Length: 468
Image 1 (cartoon, one colour):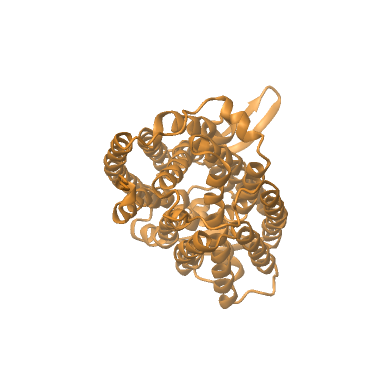
Image 2: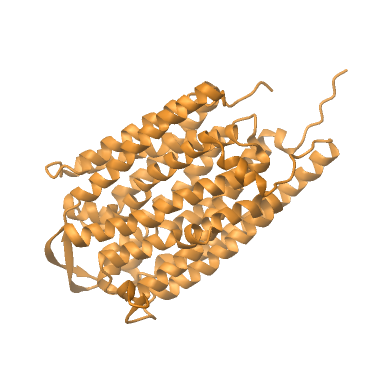
């Protein structure tokens, strides 16, 4: 006589409902992450920022995560105290950061500041509002990355041995809805209110809704704990600080981490500058320009779950990552060619980049769960996100500096906020070549990961769905 005691995660509808709750909060947080991207030239005109200062503000996302190791500590908190506590903490941190960012871009801060240690000048005359907005973005970044690893671990828990890659793909693609909204809505909001701070105010409302929704997830997750305890299902051994050393000794882990930072450094910083690139290279109107980069997350929304489902049933995760990195290089190389400046080319390249943006995450995040035990998974994700944040912090600053130093080709007069403003014109060829270089190195590490999997037998090329 066979008796199998089911838990909440075994009810298909229940685990998909839980995924919806977690993913909704992901969508809300991703909106603020990219809400300023379509407003680059408006920030530069209204707040008198340079491209370097815009890059500095954008780089703020990674300041605390990188230099204060907040992401690593967040992973430890996650593995020690669980997804419910860590998720609520992360959302509260995001709300604090969003409030500071709102205050900074709402026009309340004026003047410049110079930061130096002795005679060594760290920052020259820099806009106070850009620096304060960067500080708010840095605090938000701590909570955002902390919630990202929390969401990944929660999805792995509810879908382990089931439709894991599909679920992670759907979770990721729902976040892309937030990115798409951040491409579509800021310019209409600016035109309506004549304030660059309005999208940040909207993000505060969305984050509040995300907090309420995640509280509902906590109710279901706590019930799952009780059911697993009653069924005699034991959780893995509790996290120990020595686990960090064990993770760091895993070569495949580092291949994924380096692939992650290279790939995302060629995507997310590109999104930050994409609207201005499309306005200047493809002669698209400001109002319409933000819609083209929005095609990237929109296509990823549809394709990431598709590729995740393929990986669940067919495997080939490492091969999928190689293909995604190759497409990434092709797109940025084509963007760098000055003569390819038609509107149709811009749309086509962004759509192909959306395919790459779907392929790599759909295969990469489930692969981590095959390499690292579940009780160390939060810390492993945190360490990968920490490496990734070096790119998210450094690359926007690099691109902003390169634009100001090497790519200015003149100025133009445009109507911004109802008045004539002088805007700087840039040639984006060099930045696109920089992004392409990241993709080339990403291909190398994707091949190294595939080779390591063949040696160690992690099963990255095997399907995720086990026989139930």
